[in-house]
Length: 366
Image 1 (cartoon, rainbow, N blue to C red):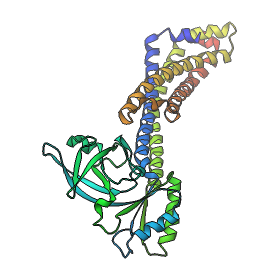
Image 2: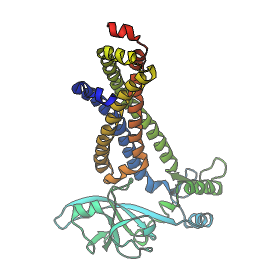
Image 3: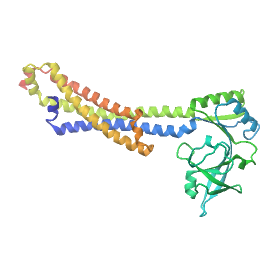
Image 4: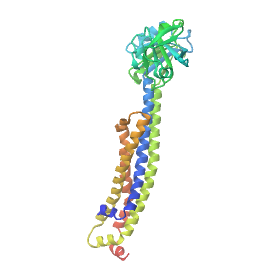
């Protein structure tokens, strides 16, 4: 009977369901968009959260990190790669004369810091060079092509990925011997297993090198930043969920109006049902079932539309639409559907109560 009653006025039913669909899409799509943004930010920071960068501190006697300090760092950090670096800058030229400014990094253990998309990133970089893919593409440089730094020729043996993290600039990586004129290291990078391990390393090194208020070495780690970013996005997702819920509340008012109008129009019919022995509880369940049907239909259609929207969002922001099928995203489809059914049933409570408690004699007279 509930399903038949919804079909009596298809246009009004369709408009009420459309309001539910819009509300579910608003909740689920905004939630999925927040997850996509959080995942992108986490990916960008992920390559840095497990790294500890060490430079000379404010109270250091040297302009840079010394060999003795590097050895002391290695003695404290025995189970993670310790990569000393020297840095400079230069200008690279293409065959057609185009020039671009690049930063130069001299390292030995290149594969601990860099991921190559083509070629090799050797464990010990003794000859050759690595170049970021954006710079190589801009200058038309390929694997095996020569590049010149400080009057010496190096052949490109690896192209560095530079899409993620903050390493999207122009960088040329050469053997550390190419910067022998610099006495000390500009920085030292420690690659830990994860963010927690990186924070423990920082604590150990702080205790070893920085006694009291003196800062012999400064330590930088982004694990804490990542935690703050995740906290921010969790708050943002709650705010987006609340904004989307507003549209579903508006849709609930529309359902309340539809159900109230429907019970008023069918007052005589309900009076006859009550007169022939249909109990109040049965009338109540019938009208609540109508409201629930509206919520279920709107929730299913809205969830399907939100899933399609999520595929597009993850394709644009993350480049991988299948990420929408992870629980972090799918839960918002469940939230939207559950909110739709709950809001619809709650909206049908008053009309159902009013119809179930209307006296049969008064209903028939009306």
